[in-house]
Length: 213
Figure 1 (tube, rainbow, N blue to C red):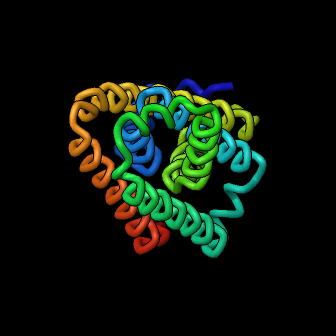
Figure 2: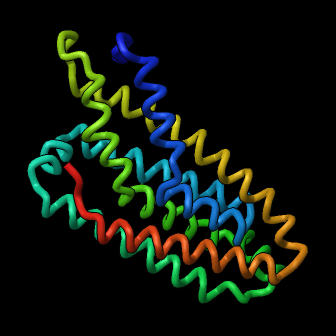
């Protein structure tokens, strides 16, 4: 059941929020440049699964718990921040690998599975997803129609779909740009460093900003 009274406004709001680069986008772009389009799309698949898991937990009642407990919310936020910083440091550490080695690593099934798993972790601990599900989506629920949990689920699935399309676009674009960077190992190394620094900076920002009302 999708409430249609403010559906257009909901879609615009969600699109703007998703479009603003967050942990998932930074991680996806970093993987696209470092490991290629296939790995970037695998990251998107993991991110989407993590976001969908957030939605399920919110629908089951986690949203109410997070709204009341600053400790739980902050703990989840710090886990996501720490994981981003860990991945950022690892990206910088591995930036010196030759381009051919990076390409071959992207083709390894185990590496791809690891990328999906890491993407899911980033998606699941992404504070922006929780903010959307617990603070934005409920504003568009029409309580006069009843079935609020079903409305929350249906609107949340729209958010997941919009995020999937948006992140996939980032993945394809970053994977295509990798070809240009791949012509020079130094370009790829610099981009890997920039991506790692971006993830570390974003992790530090999430850790320091704390919860907003």
